[in-house]
Amino acid sequence: MADPIRVLLADDEALLRSTLRLLIDATPGMAVVGEAATGAAAVREAAVAEPDLVLMDVRMPELDGITATARITARSPAPRVLVLTTFDLDDYVYLALHAGASGFLLKDVPPARLLDAMRVVAAGDALLAPSATRRLIAEYTRVSAAARAVPRRELDMLTPREREVLALITRGLSNTEIEQSLHLSRSTVKTHIGRLMSKLAARDRAQLVIAGYESGLADRLA
Image (tube, rainbow, N blue to C red; front, side):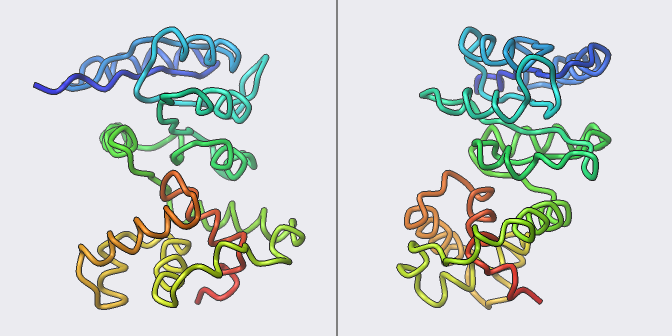
């Protein structure tokens, strides 16, 4: 039997932490190993509890979730971080992904969806809410023209097909949707994604999305 996914809850709302703890501890294959009400406490607890996954709020006292995420993911081995956001009110998700978060979800996500997302992220993949990702990252790239003025040098190493795959990832398409769009097999899509991660030094899909937007690929999306 596989070891349970060890989860650290980082949120300044005690009621939300209690609700999440009840949900997670009642789910086979998961266990809460710590709680933190501040970003600084989250960094300390992550070092002590050594969780597999951190559910991270963005806005917290003492140390914000972005800085806490950067410090937590800088450790080796680093746990995965899944950011919970209130969406339009939270303009920091893009920075959280830059800091090493593997994705984000809305705080009003249904319990079953949250648990599925936690499994996906803990397994090493990235999980993004596609429409929210496009809106948030597009806004940051819009106001940060300098970041897009010069194409990423790493893109010169990509093949035309790899650029196509990256563009579709940037749009938020799943592997299945990429297969259908480009008429490729599942194994071929996975191979292209693996090569993209290697060439762009991306830890996961979230960082590929950022690379796509910062390189200007988002401007060419239909």
